[in-house]
Structure formats: structure tokens, C-alpha cells
Length: 101
Image (cartoon, rainbow, N blue to C red):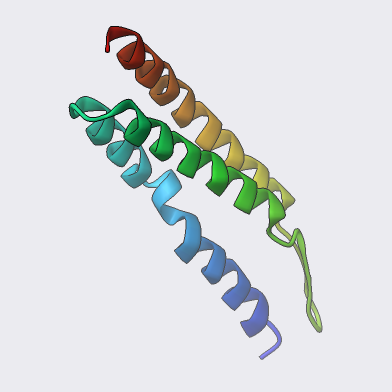
């Protein structure tokens, strides 16, 4: 029906970014930073999550469907804010580890 395409759009976003809000990404970051590995590997992980933030920013903000105009600006903003909040402690720990090496 009329709501299927907007529902698919939101489902696509959920499938793509759910790991950011359900704790999976934070767990990955914590596990990765707790391991002994080269600084470059840690920086690459941080850069990966910065790239995800950019990817979210580039997602279409509006979907225009027959009976529904979908605006996902608030969702995008919340996801990027969540990434920045989770990434700050991780980046700080990576810099601290770099200074110890």
C-alpha cells in the first residue's frame, strides 16, 4: 500500500545503523582498544567510525511518497551525535595508548 515504501526506507536505515544504537559498535570499540595492537590499527578503527558519521550525513533527509513525506533529519542527527559521544572516549583512549607506545 501507500506506506510500504516509507516503511522500507526506515527499515533500510535501521538495518544499516542499528549496531550504532544497540551497543554493538561500542562493544567493538571497547574490545578493540583493550587489545594490544599497533597504533595505526587503532587509528584506522576511529577513522572508520568517522567515515560512518559522514555517510549518515549524506543519507537523503527526505523521502517523498504518495501519501507520506518522510523526514529523517532528526534520526540522522541523533545517530551522528551518538557516534560522536561514543567515539570521544575511544579516541581519547587511543591517544593515551599512543603516548605510552
